[in-house]
Structure formats: C-alpha cells, structure tokens
Image 1 (cartoon, rainbow, N blue to C red):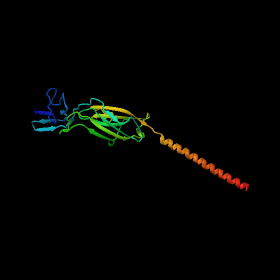
Image 2: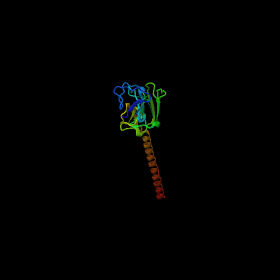
Image 3: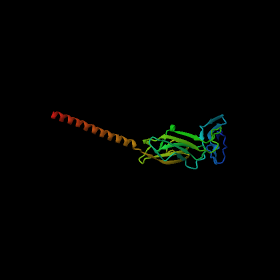
Image 4: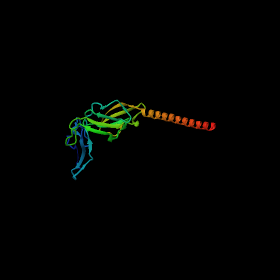
Length: 224
C-alpha cells in the first residue's frame, strides 16, 4: 500500500499545532500578526517519489481599529466655487487602514486625495506596530455636490483591506460622516436683473425722445 503524507505550513514556517489538526485541515489559535503570510499544502508519496504543491492562499492577521476616524476641516460653511480641504485620520491598527473619501455616498476620485501613513515597514513587508492612516481631500465645491437641503455629506471610510464598494463586508470597517452647509449666493443673478431693468428704462426714454422729435417736426410742417 502506498503511503501518502501531507504537510501544512506558512511562508514563515509558523508552527502548526497537532491538536485539532490533521492531514486535511489545520486549526490555529492565539495568532498574532507574525502569523500573516502565504499558506499552502504539500502532498507527497514515498513510492514512487512524488510531491505536489497546492495553490497558496494569503492569510492576514489584523489588529483592528478601536475608534471611528476623525475628520478635520477649516470651516463649517462653504460657497459654490470655494475649495474644500479636509483631513481624515484613523485610529491605530495593523496593518494601517485604507481610507476612502465619499461625497453624498459617491466615491471621490483618487486624484483629488493624498495619502499619508505613520507605519514602519520591515523587510517582509509587514508593519512593525499599529499605526494610523491619514488622507487629505481637496475639491472645488460645485452645484453637483449640493443636496436639496443645501448640505454636502462628507464621509471618511476606513477599511481593512482596501475599499471595494460601499456594501462590501470587510474584516474591519469604521466610518465618520459630517454635513457641511453650502451657501447658495444669488448676487450675480440680482445684478443681471438690475442691468436688465436699467436697459429697459433706457430703451423707454430713447423711444419717448424719438416720438417727441417726430411730433415736433409734424407740427412745424403744419403751421408753416
């Protein structure tokens, strides 16, 4: 009878406990971030000599966020055409959370944002300690951003792993939403209206003067 053996392990040779583990499955407990890595299964036969590696699967152990992100900005009220600048800062986590900005529940284009991170990466690409993420938003306020209530809803979404969509189930997700009042200025409209009124009045005076000139000319011809 052929004897088959299988082995399970990670890229970093993380020890596999014998309890609750078998040739077909493993059960790991009390994991820390060092257990993150690529796991695979190797099947071998002694007669004939044969080995086969399975496809590897990545496993990431996280230390989640403990608080919602914080949004800071310069003022509470903006006008159409002004530049809105805001920063989102997450609570520390490992790996640092990925930040996505949403305006009225719509994802903001990446070119309008700038990312920062306080995490220090060691040789294997893992973060040495828990760290916060910071992402800055800079956007010109337009009519498209204003709702029926003259407000703009600004949301900072902090997720592990990175953003997929607004309804995805994440290993860790925190969010913060604020409302910013948008002032709808009507000064230019009133100025145009005043100019139209002035133009109408000027046209009326011009017509009256022309009519009076014609009338005087007729009277002069009649009496002569």
